[in-house]
Image (cartoon, rainbow, N blue to C red; front, side, top):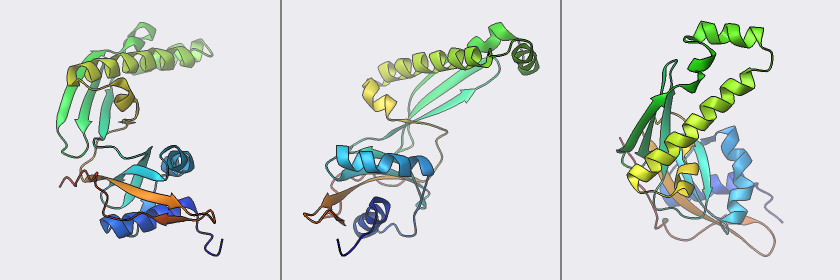
Length: 192
């Protein structure tokens, strides 16, 4: 109670102590996930740090692997690559025709369709989401990875220099959080 630092401050302190990562910024979505992830993980979390500068994802508990999904939604096709964030290795690749083609063959035709059919943007979005979900199941199967791990993957482009590391943040009787002991046994390294 004498040190009222928030969860994010204590996580940053733990990452500095255990991984020598300093001056970290944090994506707003990661901040929104943090409190729940800490509690679900028993005050232990795994984070993805982009470029050694920004926390982009927080997962509850320690994870030995972190995966990312790169998705290219083109006007005619959707491509997906499943990557190991620690090594940068592409584990599986899949693609499909963009199902939005039934609303128009090119982008401008689809814009016109939405303008002439109010509310149809939900149909276009739903079609792409179904295709992405099907591709995620396909790359998971190719890589022999469970869908739970795929669902935890970030649906954003994979960028170089992402560090995945685990940190332990524990609660004391007074309700404050402090960094755990050790250097985190579940480090995933850094890709240059």
